[in-house]
Length: 623
Image (tube, rainbow, N blue to C red; front, side, top):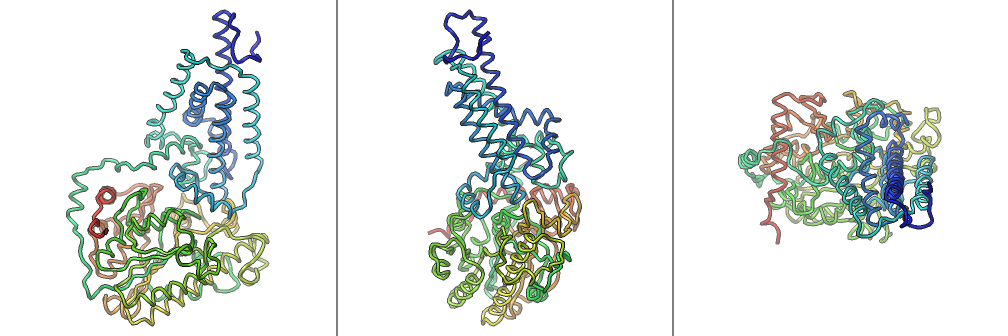
């Protein structure tokens, strides 16, 4: 029997049985190609992790079905539509391998998987990709070669073109489409997702990245679509949420207590000296520690690691632990300060398109926000540049605050850029490597250079921050300064330098989880602010999620604040971390299981923030 033919279909004179066998073989080849393409996605899903993870997928039939069947079904659909197996395969391979490569690079560079919501940030991803060294390793090259081979084989072996307007074409298209679309309710089901995973070969199920890894690639990516579109929290009770919101009306800030509030989120700023590692040749944190000693300070437990700045940023600005798309005006603390007569402004010495801040910050209540395009470019000497460092950021912020003092009180929120990884391993920009890292330290020359660049940046930031504090101390107006880091820094591909440091990042332990996700926060006040608010703003505070940092600020100031904040204070005091991985900090202990009292408070918080996101309260402030 001949299955390789030069004509695009069976011979018209063939008997029905032979025609059926012909089409069966055509579709078997197409199915095999889809399975192979899905297998390539699983190969790349592993990223820098051990290949044992890849082989583990094949011991879980449910994971294979959920990762391979969508690829096969879509290929059937495309084959029916395009009538050319090689073209259908080429188009799907381009999509699947692009998705796989994006996930692969994110895992390699930042230990962070690719989610469906990331597709809304393609421009940002493309611009930032140029700052990393993209590479073509064996697994990526193998995947591309196999995809090319599959295209050629289908062009040679699957010549059959389903005839137009036939039951065969309609049936294959309907079947493929029905399976592909019908899988979505299954793939987005959270209960099934929690059960359908293999944790045998990953390091820790506490890691959000490894939770994703334990499910493959196509399956967790499609599952993440459920997060891309907001749904009510489990068991959502609209009446209770409305009652909670009604119980806490907004309260005004007393006129005598309206002090200026300046908030600065420092990019990738971490105090490694608190871990005792690495040993440094000089104390790069000296002035930062002096500032901490004058401040109320504590650990900030973020949702992110080595990337994803905007998560910490928007959790802080909104008080939400679960973020939305911000496609419309959304309740946030800048709106509240604006309602109290404050001038709400902010600064970021990078491009406004990054994380779409240029549009979203306005929806969060900022009256003005300044980027490279409308402020920092003129001071950097490079109007077409994409970012400015702290030697420009802090003097510009100082100047901006100086001329604004004659006006209303200020609420300012800034995000720095200096400290953004990756850090070069070939040239030290802050002096000599030996100024920071001993040649005898257990690091490769490349790792020493990376560390010297990071700690040189940290020292410069700490010194400029201390100078900025001195500026605020000398002002004749009351000022609060809130400072925190957004996440831990990138430290080598696959966290290689963290391993060399010996820093515990084992997220299955209390210490490792805290180390992985925690930075520091501080709240400092000048003398006039201390007098106005009756607080010295000194001491060690609790570990908090960034969504509860504003609760702590208002508590220290003696402000009641917006109703939403009042409604979250009880949970903030007991369950001060609501991590997106499902880990909580209740009464100072990290746990995946809350007490009944903690669970009730956490549920009320979920209800309240969902209600608050969908009931905008500040329309009267919009011209």
